[in-house]
Length: 382
Image (tube, one colour):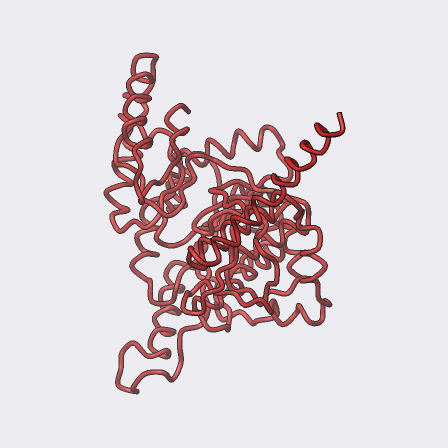
């Protein structure tokens, strides 16, 4: 019995030491990113519950105010006042992306189409910072002054630009995130849902509206849905645009978060996230990560939806169109909009035999390994 007990103890000790021994080998054999991912897995499941992250990033409201006190250059405070708004949808856009905004207005972000055809109110706004000033020759037509005049003209025509006076840049994306939640808190708190999306996204608005109407009938709370990143580690390589220093974020992985390209939260979550933003250090410039930190602070976890995309494009097939909600990195949005919303899509994908056919098609399209995979293999069975 004594010998057997000693052997059992040695076996358990070996199981505990094995991951550490493996990590030691990885120090010499793997690159920094692979090692970071391995450490993150070990850290996440063997001892980290994110309990201390909120405390380490909490600052006073006076300190946090510098992240949310920027002035509006363009604003429409009456945009959704006294209306029954199902969804407030903010599109993150850069000042120079006028063509992308125009495309969205004529396709999936067309409020008139949504109201007349889908029978609901969705308010679509574009979130922007200020263009770069005094960084180009005076003769350049792309100077900050010229771009701002163009934005004023565009907003005068469409009335859908919300702009604050921080510099519009990759490293200020978190400020753009705070802009969106601040605007909803101030001017559209009654919206049932809030969505944030990139301006190169495709959103299948009919499918999204049906999905949100179903969620609204269920009176969902603590709702946050999208393409979920679990246990992602901070990038510590300084030549990477996603680099975050240990001084900024000292933990070995981020709380779960959804891809910033497109996600939806319920109105109650949007309000609580905004309140959390007023007490957290927003120095981290990765907006979807900061969203995860804020949600972690209020005790809300993201839900995975198979038809919210990550980084890839959707396969072009009606069997996918019938259920897709978002797809990323599109330059062919008008063609995709016409194909994905054609009445024949629903007609040709309904019924038992057609659903079996579509399952086979989606297995071929979604379950083949690809670096551009948009939806997971399990989406084929939905």
